Length: 111
Length: 116
Image (cartoon, rainbow over all chains, first blue to last red; front, top):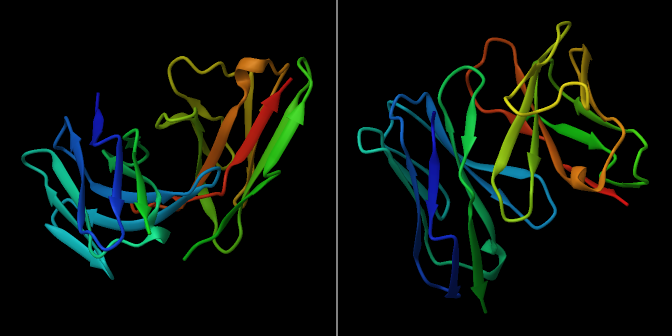
């Protein structure tokens, strides 16, 4: 059974810092991996999707990497802003219908 | 990107009543829809997978008689919480995927259910 772990559970940084969120998964036989953002009481916003054959994806200040063999992914956020404050979820697609989520990292960026 | 809506966004009901939550794909045909449940500070847990025109597949531990799922059309799935109890209070999120795609699921904005 796939298990997804996100570290740290919470992170507080001052505005402008670069930061890294970590995601690990137990079964490397994945189809793709996705990072989401969730604001309090809201649904999920897809940030980046990395196919199993890819090593990284970039969108603006966000960069996600994937090391499938070691079961790890990182989300790098450059020059953090208060508007980046949210919970970031990592989800692994292990097949046609199965998305396994981590518990998320709650990020707070202070002005 | 594809848009998925949920209605209502929040609902408060009395214990023992039933509540229906709708999930709609607004600009694509969703042959498969998923229903998740999220407790505070916990990850999303898949409850069931529904395919248009067939019975839903429930995850282990999810009571199919309590959480009724209907996927009668390619753009609409409903989740009915029957005989709701306070422990059913949670955040319910649906997602949708179009035919034959192993790509991303598109998520709805969620429904906050509070059972008094």
